[in-house]
Image (cartoon, rainbow, N blue to C red; front, side):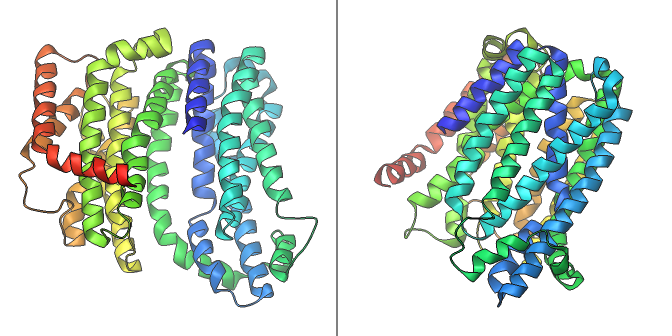
Length: 463
């Protein structure tokens, strides 16, 4: 949490101190890297982690690891080239860098490929159970991706951001590779580390196995990026990099506030309930806790954001209120949509849920096409990230055949205030009548759930 807090402070400094073009360029580069990392492994990172413990010999481990790493590297390189071409075509490069476009493209390619390659190699470490090293890596990356681009930007401008991100990813990749080749080889399993890019061990049979298990889960990130990436590029092409600072502010807000209700709380609740609750009941209680916490967090954020964001981010936050609200609420809803899935399920059910998520994404995109005047803007971009998990939550009980919340309680207060908060997302200020409704709904929700919340707090205290 301390590392995330420091990274948050560095991100805020970048928004406050850098030019609008630099912040926009940084936002687009980060989005490009996420695109390559997400699509580059074509879902095989999941299947690799499942299949690795099943290999019966060193030779089989060599084949699986080499096939996984080489395929990821090749796919990432192809997607990186395509992404760079799109960045050039859509005006995603600062104008003064166009005179040196060839070296800029080479540096960008190096950054994107090394960032994706490092994720691949760290996933190998994770599959082998080296959790301590992966945790330390997360700390290092969080700090360096905040520090080096900021220093580079203050000294060199947008090119400094690219160099800072490139150096960070290149070092991260180098550290990951170095850890694959220890000076002391203690057993045969470690010897497989020397073969992860050995083409002799590349086998199409292993590739078929990896893809057969991984591709069904690849459909969601593929659909997400096929919808959101073109919208982002189209916005940059029409509005320019200078207007992406609002998106960066919204992302920072979501990363800080959405982490609590969508990611941290389910883990804490499950940890505090060990040996007390299990399976469906635990997930239902986790869902209810996180729903209530999301309501509290977003209600307070909505009431304070018009004064809070200008104080934190300065004048750059002027047009970011609505975007920030959508992103913060989307982070909470996304976390809620994942809670029912945090228990063992048959592969067929997981595939069906993936299909539901894909259909929800497509439906959200179609809604944005129908709604007038926002088809190509950042509001459409952010709204898809909100509507898609919301639709998933609505239809998930029918797919699972169970309620998301236990008991027969009347959840009218929670539903009413959630609807009001959803309406406020599309306003840059909160009208007095909505403030009254939010405060009243929040008070009614807290009174109704006071016993449940007290019981949850006691669990945390005992844990």
